[in-house]
Image: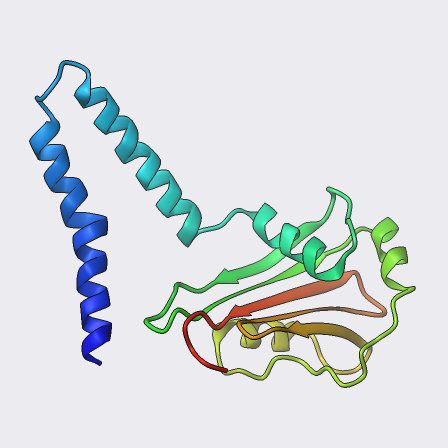
Length: 173
């Protein structure tokens, strides 16, 4: 517990306090320093926003990467969710897609992994996926390595697909 507090305090110091202190110190240091510091803060805010609220292309790229299929640009994200990193470094993201009919033909040729079931971890991602997808007519695929859990699937008689990604970060599986 003590090391978690140290990590949190170091994060606050390095990500919030030191940038504010350096801005205050160097604001009037050189003539164009205000512009440089403003640009740094704007990029800092944009990067932080992208980390906490990823674009739809992030989820589509995950689906393309996990399935090894290049889907067309007409794919739509119906629902999406991304968690924040917790103290152990765990992270999860999921999305439900509506796939166009021409891409649906690519999915019909895939062979199902029979031992894979829907994610049953009690978090918001598994709740979103389990509401939309039932085990009947579901084709799922998953891959696991020592720090990542990746799963994707689709319904046979529908144009819906899902992707689920969980990174275990610093925790031991």
